[in-house]
Amino acid sequence: MEQPKSKLTRRRFTFGIGAALASAPFAASLLGATPAAGHAKRLVIFFSPNGTVHKHWRPSGSGASYAFAAGSILEPLAAHKSNLLLLDGIDFKGANNHAGGMQAMLTGGGDISVDQYIANELAANTRFASLELGVQTSAWGGNVQTRMSYRGAGQYAPPNDDPLDVFRRLYPSAAGGSDADALLARRKSVLDAVRGDLAKLRGWVGSEQRVKLDAHLASVRQLETTLAGGSGSGDCSTPPATPQALAKNDNANFPAITKLQLDMMVAALACDMTRVASIQLSHTVGPPVFSWLNISQGHHQLSHMPDSNSAGVADFVKAERWFAEQFAYLLTKLEATADPGGGGTLLDTSVVLWAKELGDGRLHTCESVPFIVAGKAGGYLSPGRYLRFSGESHTKLLVSLCHAMGLSNATFGNAAAGAGPLSGLSA
Image 1 (tube, one colour):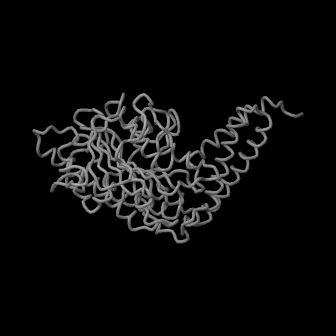
Image 2 (cartoon, rainbow, N blue to C red; image 1 turned 60 degrees about the horizontal axis):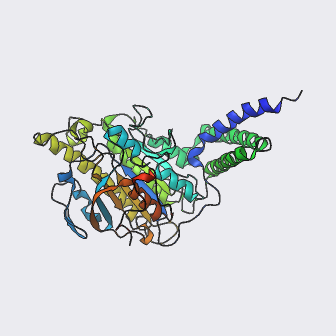
Image 3 (spheres, helix red, strand yellow; image 1 turned 90 degrees about the horizontal axis):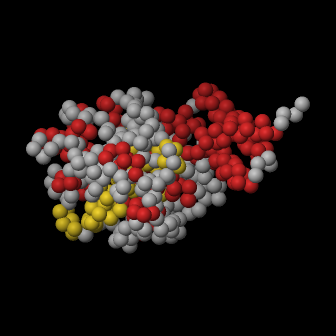
């Protein structure tokens, strides 16, 4: 006897939607849009935690006439000075402390983070709608302290902390062996089943639910593209060497994993696997110990050192300079890599954000949070300047990122915090 449609719909709908949600990182329309000329093609986000000590972060001078002091946190970025916008005096409105700052940093107090919003709006015909990488982000699980990217309210876009697993995702054919082939076949088989179920359900539900199902079908189609090898325009025919398997939560592996993740992120951008990528180095209240710098206290502990503890502050500055060196390494890699679609280097055609979740970490406030925007964004940005603001909402910076990518939204996140982009960033 034929099963009643109501029962079949409920069970299969739950299965189909659940499976489709699993493919959400790859969701994108196959009719992808390319940002207009004079805008960035890519968004890259780099995160390091626990705020700063402003007097060791701030350069001297202002505008185009600025300089990094010897021994300062940002001195390792001196070679990239002409490609930087240093943004000072930006506040998070309605957010405070570690968890509040981490949750609001990219969402602006809304439900979705700016990276996921831009990925959705671009709907690029790439293997990955967005790529989230991390280093020691998940030992405490997924919560508002450890996650910065959101697909929607309470829906984390978790970073992948394992370089070997990232490599297998990026280069499934290079993972090699019959086991990899069998896994690929099983995944494709599951997708076939999900696609069939969703297509059947489409004829049984109302118009409102049908719109949602169409979005899920688009996700499944994009995942099929991912498993088949993708449609990126760059040369991905020769993958890099398979990374060494490293214990992802071993403190001593933090530098090596960071470099591997940065290398693979740039490689993915270079062959157009994705146009939205992020790397999250630890998380707020992050506990890594910079033992490779002969530092014995955890980063979060160092971020609370008072000025009276000069040795502790010096160690924090040393750790922050290491983060600046990693950001410089990322920029150097982007600048040395040609854009697969032309228009210069990846740094010329991208907008790159170094984000933090706190201002002065010792005060637990989200006031005067330091941000750096790098790259020329296809000509949209006018870098090479240090800009001071007086308590402007960081939601305006998030709007600026959207506009740099060719979008036109007037607000982002909490609209009450302010409308329009930050002034003075565009060319």
